[in-house]
Image 1 (cartoon, helix red, strand yellow):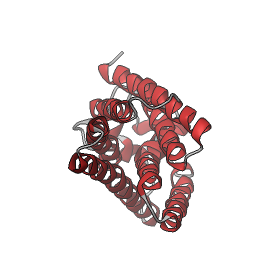
Image 2 (image 1 turned 180 degrees about the horizontal axis):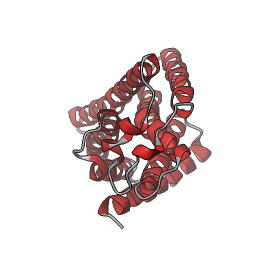
Image 3 (image 1 turned 135 degrees about the horizontal axis):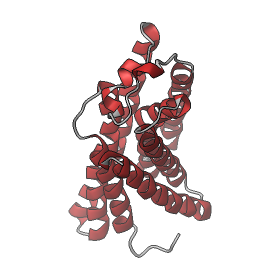
Image 4 (image 1 turned 60 degrees about the vertical axis):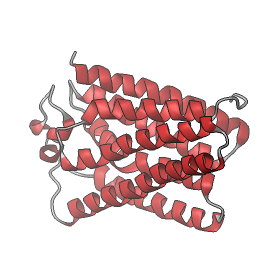
Length: 234
């Protein structure tokens, strides 16, 4: 098996465990930010697992699931979780939630009803280098799909990374809870990596790819553990 396969599998396991811990906290505390983060991490794990499977064999459903979860849904879910946590005006938080939910749902038929060209698939080759040849959709549908990826990833990145930087700055300025400051620093760095994954999938960039996804998941997980150090579990 290729190194890329094992890295993708490790990413799926890491983020899957992370998702379980976050959703366990949600089950006890019933906080919306935990639910949004948990869903985002489940999608992160599912996308990585699909990526590992697709490295050696093609499956139309898994290919579309990989694209939708990884390129469309992960970043806005994680970003929305941060907004739920930090926003003081819940009205606008819920408005933004319904907007990104609607955009994510709009993307579903665009991706899952799209015609594919399985003959273009090459086993052992990075999906980011060949997905554009596998997708046969052109014209308005392709343009809308690309716009949705850009908008949702930008939204999620700004909220997740910006929220973590803001929180780290507040703790630093007040000189309190240094573990939370450092936890948010790790989250900010890690948050850039999975969010960038959507752009890399979109652009077909051969750089960064699988290792960046794994490091992003690890840093997010580490940041969460550091920031919540000393809190009751779950």
